[in-house]
Image (tube, rainbow, N blue to C red; front, side):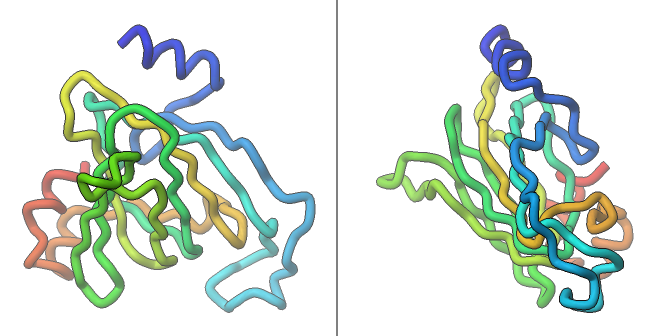
Length: 166
């Protein structure tokens, strides 16, 4: 845990509402006006945003969704299990990491509107990633899943929904 505390301190990370720790590292100076965006956006958005995201084996990132695509980039630690339930109801699990020979990938895209959650399956460990969102992230675009509602929509995925919702 000392290493995790050092990373949190050195990167200036704060607790994230979905679980884990984060810090915004980039927000484009330029923006897209509301009229030029799809109707699901209620106001203008920066072109792009990026964060550090640290997840530990003591916690998980609960199912949530945003309106934009989100690209995950692996930086270090142990692999991060990223669980996605697509808008069409399909379940996907990706291992974000650096061991390509064991099926890990260093980058995964979550499509806007898909539900996703993440966890560290190794004990006493952490995974450090970056997340890039375009158009840029705004908490107005963030929706935390309701466990019961998600299970009613996707009953085939009850086990992972129960595990990764609060």
